[in-house]
Image (cartoon, rainbow, N blue to C red; front, side):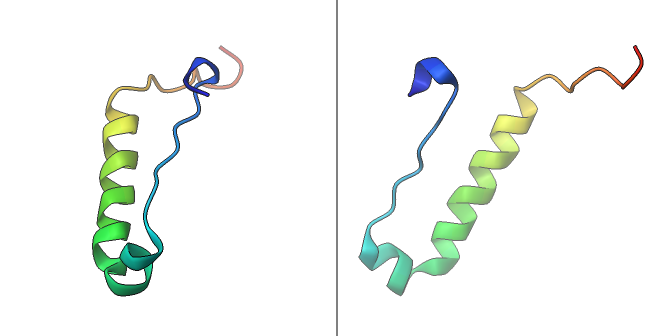
Length: 46
């Protein structure tokens, strides 16, 4: 899936049920890092 630019974040059932705060923190961290390394699209009409 990496060749298509798809990343899968995996969490165990136990993590989701017992530690949702850290699951959310991990997802937010991934998004922040992804956005740092992804160029912004050109404005429309450019």
